[in-house]
Image (cartoon, rainbow, N blue to C red; front, side, top):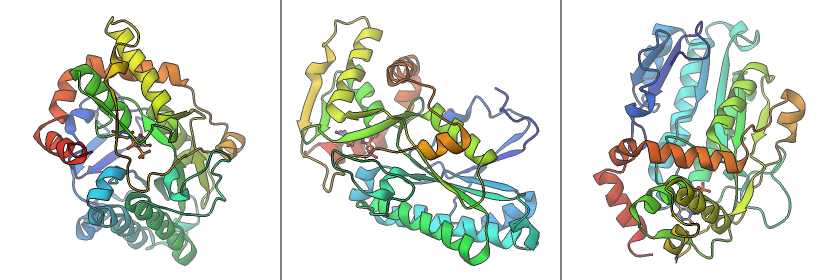
Amino acid sequence: MVPRYPDVQFWNLDQLTYAGNLLNLSSIEHAENYTFIHSDITDLDKLNSLFEAHDFTTVIHFAAESHVDRSILGPVVFAETNTVGTLKLLEAARRHWGASASNFTDGSRRFYHVSTDEVYGSLSEEGYFTEQTPYDPRSPYSASKAASDHFVRAYYHTYKLPFVISNCSNNYGPYQFPEKLIPLVILNAIQGKPIPIYGKGENVRDWLHVGDHCEAIDTILRYASTGHTYNIGGGNEHSNLELVGMLLDEVDKARGQEAGHSRSLITFVTDRPGHDFRYAMDYSLLNKDLGWEPAYSLAEGLQDTVLWYLNNQKWLEAVADQSYREYYTRQYASR
Ligand code: TYD
């Protein structure tokens, strides 16, 4: 596959922790304008030498520990990677770009920070998160992301480092590690295992296909004004129980099984501690300013995702390895 921008040189820095995998990158690994760097964003010396060597003009910062349940089991690595890692990336950019003051004002440099709707806390049945909603993170994961957002804005106000931030709702789609709800449900349905639903399954999430998220990031990266923040959402709110029901029906359809077959696997388990009730994004600012809106309907997106997982069972087997099974036992055995 040729990346969309053949004239742009891409360097992809990734630590390849448990959720990262070179298999995910095989379609671009031979592209001439792409280089993979196996490294850690908390290694400032390495970041400094990479900035020196390659004179990066743009940072798109996706790197994060992102699973709430893991942040409950072990919060420290979330602060280290998400908060301190972001700070070190900012520091490397400031040091390198700051050598010329005009780099901060002429629009030729940009630090794009990818964040989450979870920084805003939890909604009741009414209302939406807007870009003005006060921060109210409630899990170790969302606290670490909120802190990282604050550092990015602090670098702008203090050093004029040119940033944009986007906060996005729950993603789903190909290549998602099967600790997150949608791939976990598909994997368990394929294996005929119980489908764990926390509490009564009443919590609500706003789902967005990862392809739509990438289009939004590309749009914001190219057209947003420096210092702006945009919410990205799918406009697809469903309770977990509704969503899992729809997803299992897709799995049954794709496997030629009668409707309702996999729904019998649904098992209610002990709720997540501090489980945020509802997330829902108002993305009207992004739509009004830059014209972005999601292209996938939820029905299309779920169908696409189920087919991807069914057609990529080798990938699933490779990522659902021994360490995944150990995590799964730790997370679910006593629920
Ligand atoms: P998740 O994919 O972990 O994303 P987040 O916590 O960032 O929203 O979970 C989505 C929703 O699904 C959330 O309300 C928790 C719930 N959930 C379950 O009910 N069972 C599960 O096994 C998992 C992983 C999540």
